[in-house]
Amino acid sequence: MRSKEGRRVARYVVAVAIFMCGASMLTGCPYSDPCWEVEACEPDPVPPPGPCEGAPGTAPALDECGVFVSPSSGDDRSPGTKDAPVKTLQHAIGLAAHGRGHGEEATRRVYACGGEFEEEITLPSGVDLWGGRLCDGGDWSYDGSFDGPDHPTIIAPPGGIPLRILGAEGTALAGDSVTSVIAGVRVVAADASAPDGKSSIAVILSTGATAIVQDSVIVAGDGTDGEPGEDADTERATDGVVGNNGANACTVDAAVGALPVVTACDDGIESTGGYGGDGGLDVGGDGAPGQPALAEDPVRDGHAGLGADLARCSDGGDGAHGADGGRADGAFGTGFLSDDGWIGVRGKDGTKGGVGYGGGGGGGSKSRGDMFACPTSRPQSGAAGGSGGSGGCGGRGGYGGGYGGASIGIVALEGTDLTVANTDVFAGKGGHGGVGGTGQLGGAGQSGAHGGLGYGPNGMWRACNGGWGGNGGRGGDAGGGLGGASVGIAYVVPNFAIRPGTSIVPGTPGNGGLAGNSVPEDAVGKGERGPRGPLVAFPAASEPIH
Picture (cartoon, rainbow, N blue to C red):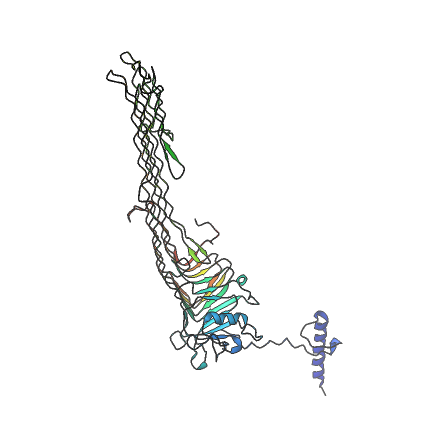
């Protein structure tokens, strides 16, 4: 039997239980109606940890927890168990993401032996890659040492991006957790192995990916130098055309001024020498100005020659030379990030030289004067003026220098979530920007033609000559390309955490390329040096470069 004290305690517990049950209907309280039969409420039991839970260094390596892969003893026809591992990482990842078959669920984890895998790896969202396992004797243990027999799993393909982590939208595997844990690996990118053939990038987190990289080493190789911009044609642009001669006096009934000549350039622009002035009886006709018309040039304005009246005629004016294309700007900015890695900026192309202006047509002459006239037996027209020569075409500009290749350890695109812990990230050298191409020489302007001759030795005035066409302008030299980036972690938006034990070491960025036809000391048209830093923000591919 209970003592009085015991009965008081029991009544107190029941009273408390009745109050709690009536007031809140506490869950996890095993009771039956009526509530006052309850003497005590036990808390919900905490479920024991699952057999696969734990950190990479301490969680048990069981067949039910993952797929096992060994580069030395594995076979991709095997089921991927500890006793029968597969050989390649990508095959193991596929089994972990979709299951081994026979109704087995996806394990969502890969255990990889220490050793070298010459593969490009694509890791679906939510699949873990735990490397550095000691596989001798079927142990598959991991103690975090990179110097012992459980050396890291080395992912080092001869080309491409060694490790790409997909976002949740990029894979059918999402489930409860979309975080991928990568541990105990050494990811090594070869020089210039990215899809652009220039950059070296070790890891890319695609849009929306979530990853934890720990106890690992990430190494990017060197980028290559950007290609030089293509030079414009080495042969000069199209030359102008020599003008037409005017008709001699007393040879035709109507001495029409010489017809114009035209230079048709490949960009649709034309240069035209002016008409020669008509020959007349008492007054010669004026020539026509060269085309295109020039607003202001006191020396070479392509003006029309005046026809003879009381004074002799005048020659047409020479056409102006076309303007040279200026040196283009060198590349600047940071470049931008995409699924292919880093895309830099090319130097600006050189501008096309201006077309040479046509010479003016020479003035026409007359056949009657105080002391001269055509014989009555011949036509009576005076000499006609010669047409102006046309100008040469402008030279084409050179093409901008290419950007140098980048060296980037980790690229994190939009919407990614990255944690790096106890990991070394190394970037190599960025490539130098390419030199800009040189411009093409403009075409040569040609001479205007002679005006017609007067008749006989009696002092009849001759007609006047057309002016020279101007030379085409030289095409502009192009700017140099952007130097390649050297960055530890390149990201679009700052959504990452750097944990203790992490070291991020950038290398040397590439210098910007020189402009065409320049020397190292000439800063005009030179591209900028590439971006450098442990952590550098870049615009996404959809955003403007500059």
